Each structure stands twice: as structure tokens, then as C-alpha cells.
Image (cartoon, rainbow, N blue to C red):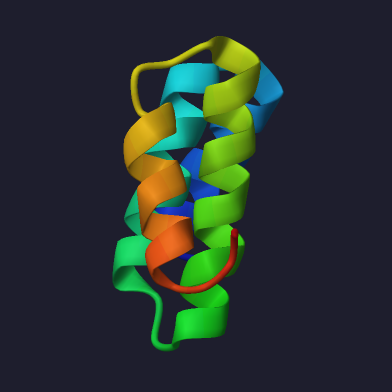
Length: 70
């Protein structure tokens, strides 16, 4: 298991929305392909929506740029 995976698990267990947003965004940035990146971005976006976080607009724009949102 990678350090990032361990951090994600810990953030889920702690229900730390800000950490989940940051970690899933980081995973998207490190992904080897677009599908994986958008998978992580979608999760980060959902966590941001749930938290009312300021990252909502940025994450949404990234998903739109990759054709994942109209």
C-alpha cells in the first residue's frame, strides 16, 4: 500500500473532508491516465460539494476540461 493510500484510508476513517479533498486531488495529479485522474477528481469534487469547500469551482473546471461534465 502506498503512503497516499494509507493517508486516504486514515482520512476516510477520521471523516476529514478537507484531507479527502486534498488527497484525492493529489491522487488525480499523480494518476497515470486520464480515466484514473478523472475518477479521483470526481471523488475530490463530491467531497468538496459535501463540505462546501472553496475547491468546488476548480475541481468542476478540471472535470469539464476533460469532458466529464457538460
